[in-house]
Image 1: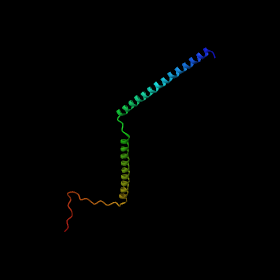
Image 2 (image 1 turned 60 degrees about the horizontal axis):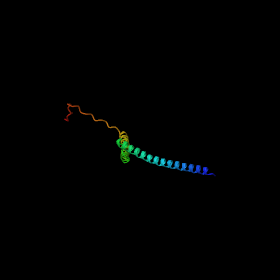
Image 3 (image 1 turned 180 degrees about the horizontal axis):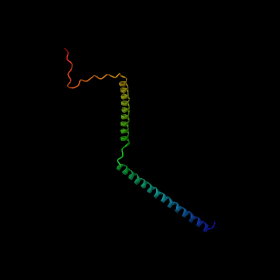
Image 4 (image 1 turned 135 degrees about the horizontal axis):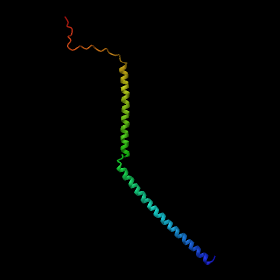
Length: 110
């Protein structure tokens, strides 16, 4: 290997080293920019969600539990009403009493 070839190899190596340093610096800058963008997006989303007046998971679960309980009570009441209607239908019908007409005299005992 001649002097010129050695010099060219060192120049190539130096060039590759410089390119590698620039690439590493760019990757570091991109990583920093990425984390900054993620932080900005997260802050925007949190502000948007707070402005939308959404309920929390705890509030949702509490209302869901109340709705489930109300549904169960409603179903129990439907069952009771059905049983009462069945029992009422099974009873013999009473004959209605004759109502006295207003102004009519009741028969007197003699």
